[in-house]
Image (tube, rainbow, N blue to C red; front, side):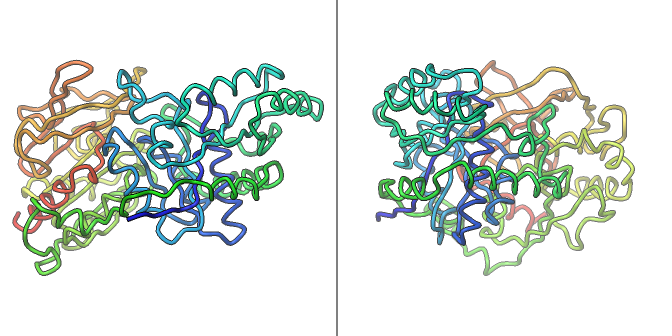
Length: 460
């Protein structure tokens, strides 16, 4: 099967060059032309896809060759891009930066090659003129399999600065597809884990996205960018499908929708914004009725809840409000005590602890959590230490840690995962129906996780 969706990968020589501004602005600018735009982000980032969704009107989706494996990048891309006129893929870090010690794996360049997509290089030109030509030449010649189809020069100071940059770029032979001046109004605030999520500043985010769209529309050649996108190569793979994933050989033989549909409550709102769209799709395909709730505002779990999923986010920013919602904390503790399946990742782990920064949380786990100055960041190769509601003992999964908090103790008598790197250690908690861990995983890599969880919801 061969499929071709016009697509661009927005990359840069380094973080902080303006990829998010350009990618989000392009999505919004193309959407303003009446096009259906599919937004994507390379890597495990949860925050940028929120801005992408605001710009495009579609769910932002991640493409991670480490978490899901290279073979799933194309299918997951086509799944997200169904029915779209163009797809914009924002890269991660510098163009060739990937998983530590793994060569090109999970880098923007790797994903661009897997997607057979042209790359647009966003260059921060604020402190250079002629040197930009040497920089671009290096990036365009480093890997012949990566096709850099053009450059967008960002943070250009003046007309003269632009003239100098364009003159230098003529020597490289790479088209200049856009020139963006410095524009503080497109900046988005950051804190300890990156940008502030859209859910916490929706009105301000709408204004920032509109400013990005205006800046990109004015400074970039949208027609030339569309033409470049249309030159992407065809992909010889089929789109990923959640229903097919949970019914593939080796999965549960029964048809999920022919059996009772358990209700799975999924935490959301400002405090819990980290999730992959495919998780909800897999839970639904496995036969669950997925119902969102907001731990900041809802004092009860959705009626009939038989399973609970609490993903990542920023509970440390809302610790007082979460603690003050005692009725919901007690409801979560009661559900966990009943043996119902509870899957918690990172922020969810903190919420299930006895306390966070000295304020009471749900008390499901006999552990305390606190903010720290130390950033824990990186991919992890994990194995399930024992049986749980998510996985059988020995199940291998890849995940990602990203937090500035610590939980003491770091694991319970029955840990969730064993890590092979960066050091051999165990982490997380398995207690009755609870699986709680710092590790973010992408269930599309192992759809059996969703099936197992929903089946436990039926029988618990």
